[in-house]
Image (tube, rainbow, N blue to C red; front, side, top):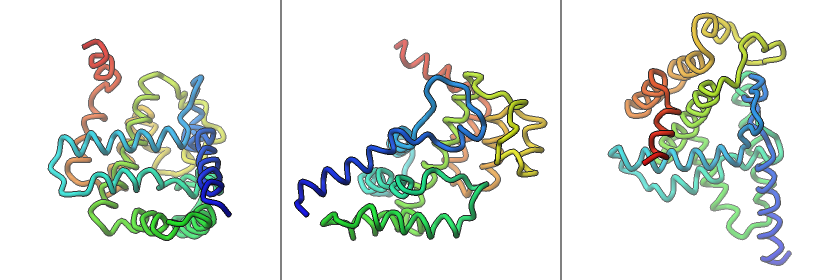
Length: 217
């Protein structure tokens, strides 16, 4: 197979992520003309990583982090976007790793890319831990933005897999959708103090107002 064909084949496969909508938004029945795709999520995670790296003192290779984030959803080209409430972590790891291996199969640097993907998944290096926290927090912030647009009706969740979880169900009884989401992941995800501070800021402030003020400068 030619190098040119390898490049085009890989690009075409990755391009599919532009049209795969994030499952969490479908589960929560987000009502919006355009709902975030996996490709848009990847972009958001990268921009969040750059912003956090700018403001906090992390001793990391940010270029490695950005590369890692760029490939961290490759498996979803084949397996789709699976939420933590519909598949176990071990099950997802197995099928996702197999999928990434298939996707990278013909690339000359497939081994290097696959090793970086596995490093992200293992969360054992400072770059992978930083990248994973960005991945989690970006989702939480996107939830907050959708909630501020009033895109979710908590009374219209009949087919929502997530809300069948008892803890999630209890949280949404006394909180807005994004408050419940942010509080759940603050409890269940190992954020460092900087990421937790950003999460708490989003929890306690209207972040759409920040965006609007910045664009008016």
